[in-house]
Length: 199
Image (tube, rainbow, N blue to C red; front, top):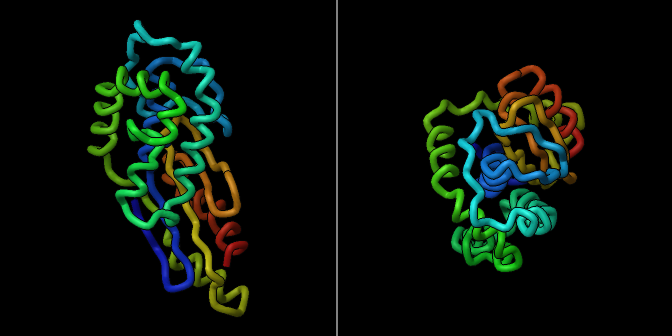
C-alpha cells in the first residue's frame, strides 16, 4: 500500500486483501458469479480448488451482497478508529458481520484457504507496480485551479486481473488493474482528471 498526501488530502494506492480474496475465491472455485463491475480472471491465475462438499448454489446466492460489502469496505480505508476495528469488520475475517450473514462463503473461504494463501505468496514475491507521482498530479491540479487542494481522500484499489480495468465505484474510490497501472501514460491519463475533480 502506498499513501501520498498532505494536511488536506490523502490518496492510497494498493491491493485490498478483501478484494483479492474474493476474486481468488471466485476463480479458485470457478464460481458462476457476476462481479459488478465486471472483472476478468486473476493474473496470475490461482490454482483451481475441488469444490466437493461445498454448496455452490448457496455460495452463488450469497455472493452479490457479500461482493458489495467487500467493495464498500475497500473504499472506506480511513473510516476506522483502529486497525483492530478495521480487521474485525473486514468481510473476509471469519467472525465479521459479513461472513456471519454469509456462512456458505465463510465455509468456502476456509475450504480454498491454502490456494488463496499460495496465490497471495506468489504475488508478494513480485515487484510493486510503478505508481504515478500523485504529489505532482495534485500540485498541477492546484496550479490549474489557482488554489490549494480542498479536503479529499482517494482510494485506488488495485486488482490483479487479466486486462486493463479502471472502474470508478464512487466519487473517491476506483478499482484499477495492475496492468493499467503498469502502462504509466494511460494510468496518469486516467488519474489526472480525477485528481483535478477532487482538488
